[in-house]
Length: 297
Image (cartoon, rainbow, N blue to C red):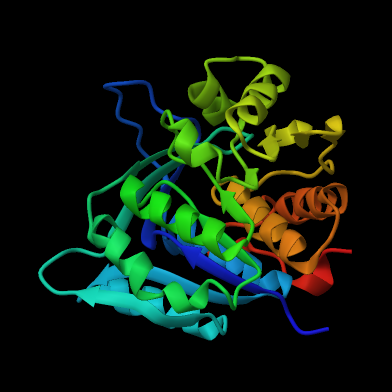
């Protein structure tokens, strides 16, 4: 069978990471952390995850005419991702994310600067409208303008293609958008912001009531939960020693989207995505940590 085709609109960032003994309190300075630079951005991370899962990925994004953008593009190209629509904008910075990792569980704090990612517009989506009928699944996140996300959802609906939304960073979303969503993939915190419900079960039900066909809520070390018309299904996570949780949710979304594009059942697609994310957190970095298809049995 030919590889599934994923059209992905999203952000590209360079992650500047400091690993601390623990996360600092507000106003506190911690010394002694180690520093690393790695490729990131929720869109680019998910593109790499899907490509390593076996999908043919077309990445639509925006970058500056700087070293960060050049290196990011080269990294995606090495993954055999189609970056013809990863456009350069002069006079603006490529995406940058500052990340703190701390504690045994490697929890994280992340801040993302304004950048070329904010220039990925609804017009950018319209410009690649011919890609929609050729794609099996359309994917976006919320590190790009909301108007861009809405346009991608509308064109996916018109082309009758599944639209997968990773609602991060979380913000309340209009029902007009949620009605176009095939699968939404928040974590617990994001699900609570979307719905006002602290219980993942109730949050998932609220997302279905809003119009999503499937709500897949990631639960960290407890795995994931699928809420759809068939009910609520829980998927335990493999027991591993975490090294770096940055990018785990992106790994999950990329693998889940690939499973949907392949025509797997939601149960099978979520099961495989949980396994892939479990591997990713045992490695440092975001894109570098994404497992390849042969590693995920």
